[in-house]
Image (cartoon, rainbow, N blue to C red; front, side, top):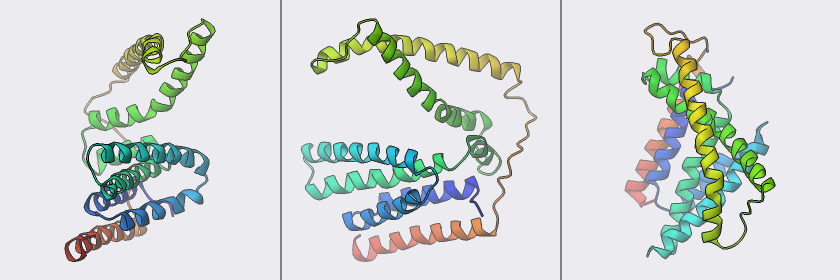
Length: 226
């Protein structure tokens, strides 16, 4: 049986809480390994592994910044691993949950205002479109002779030729979405969700295990300093 969005949100929150509480590299590495196991057996593992690879690079960069900023090597490891635990859990949530189901769960079960729930999921929905448009603009500007090679200052200056059309396209997309929502009566008092997001017995069991995980992590932190 597939988990409903509420269960996935609860597990993501539990893993993020555990990452914040834990202070040792060994415990955090165990959480990262546990999160990678379902990815390896997922039907969407190609997309997920690509995202995880980028997150690993960012974690390394974050650890280097922490170390250069005066932290110890241990704190650099902890910072990078903590970020990985939280972001990998978020990747699993987004790649295994339909956005309309996530919106329905946020509104009907977590009682989040409809406008905020839609704003959150709409932003996630347009991330792939934004990346595709960024690639298209880069190719179009390259055909016009815009080169992003050279030192960092020159690349930053030339990248403004990409940022400007991207901003204009984003504004046009926002205006189109606002008009479409207005025509559909968004924000009215009556709303219905067709997604079946009610938890089942297995979902409650998983949420209970997630709660026990957080409790165990708090115990280990207080008793043994993990």
